[in-house]
Image (tube, rainbow, N blue to C red; front, side):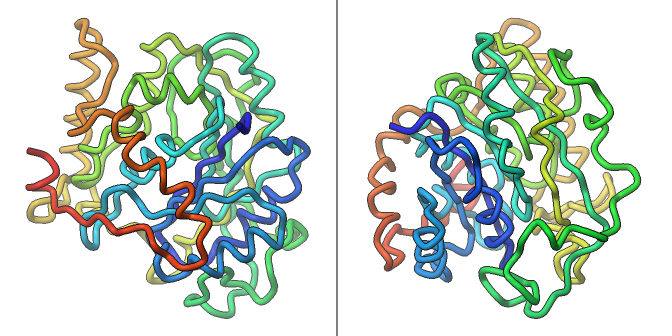
Length: 319
């Protein structure tokens, strides 16, 4: 059994080279990567072969539940949590490069009891030279290396946590792009609330809030900063297919706007602060669903994409 499960979710082409370049060179080796991929059925063989070539312990799977064209980030995150073998889970956003001591920098705090580690992201306002946006592995002229970051324009605002000292902090903005926590706590609180997959909303803050209410002390760790390339700089990739992803008042028929998601978040805060357990309202039990899909770990090692795609519309999923 591995100590650490790194979970990355992805919806786009490309970016696999960025993830793999960082993880292949980690100083901490007792880990696995669970890649939950909306393009699983299109690139599984290529991704698995590359992972083996680079010496990565990869579990490559689709989301446990899809909803047609729409982005299902909470469902994807929960798929990774349920398939995780490691005692500690670290979330890694797509198109992000992790420095060699990234896992170790997260792990140092997990000797301090129940903690929720939030680490910053350094954002770039430029990308390396792009050749092919349809390439499933890499968009760039060359396979990504960290040297390609040199000279790229940094976002002047960046992640506010970069400016905060490392150590214990109070409840604060959380982005679920570079966070770590114990697997059992994640299962007990129900992972991410999949009601946010109905559209747009701050599911990341609500996610962290429940961990804190379950007894986890939030920590900030600057040494675990990720280098985050921004695929949304590219035309056609400006946003994920949320539905209602524009201004806070935007509304797509049948989808949540940002205000809808924010209202749901605030209602959950109020319920939990009034004594309700800090657990999601997902339409399944996470421990039971984990048993149901655990064999996906073995199926993920077959070169042919044999894991079935479970595409279920909202009206059937949330009953």
